[in-house]
Length: 391
Image (cartoon, rainbow, N blue to C red; front, side, top):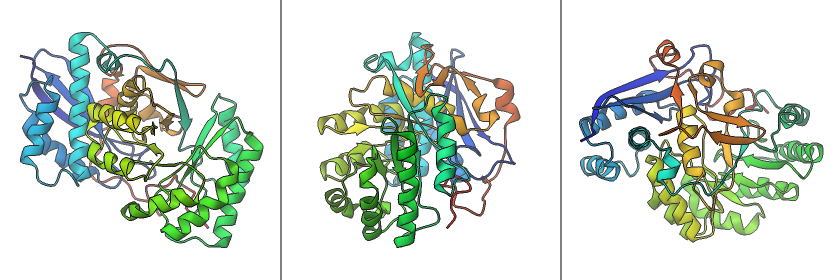
């Protein structure tokens, strides 16, 4: 029987990096099997590095010595022992890392990329969109200049947050400034480029509607998390009053959450995060629920290379795939070089086709990038792109 023999958890980062989840700390899980194979997983951080790391140690107690093929059983064994897992992102993040690493081991054991074990390729090409690219952008000219540099490298879709330091509420001036940014992006880049509006769940319903209506004419592909996440009951009203598709999902933790949001008419595009919603198999199930309602999938992907590889394996298999988030252009060099095995070129993302996740680790960089403690905290919230939370 193939079992999980050894479990190692790595907190990685670069002390000089600003506090941004796409540039500072990441948590990498390394599972070694009884036959000597190695599988990797990843868990998100974002102001919870140490709590997630400790939860990974708790999950390890359940997964140690288990048959890594038994993904459903192993997840259920943890669920049976846990009490708050339905509402604990620390626990679901930890579980996700183990689930992803288990799939990596399974694929390597069978000599197959994971996507072939999930139904095979439906999508030959995975279109990506750039995020994280707009650091220090405040004026419309700032946004356009940086976007054009990526257009020259083949990108045709950009997500960005044009709302500066406005939080909860936004006045006429704030709406006007956001409108100017989006208007110049549209006029400068043309209709062939997709614009994706990020709100980071920052607004109360009234102000979200005000901001959304001001951006309708620029035809965004979607508007992400327009309303504070705990005020989800107002999303149907937002959808009724604002003619932009609503996307969300990075804060939802399981298929039941997504089923409720979808069936209650709260969302047009779902964005599960494989590293906090219980991994690859759950992501495939969530995608199937969405497909049953005619909803598209655009997975959230803001952390590290293991997350990207895991996500691409599911992207290949989904009939209702829309577009894939990529921060790779904005990563520091240590994170870019930590794993090899997938590519991001000309707005297209692709896996190597090798067994498991399809990636290989730089062992020296894995050891040399170790850090400890909490991730750095700057003057801006860690969920914004640095240098943009300004009036």
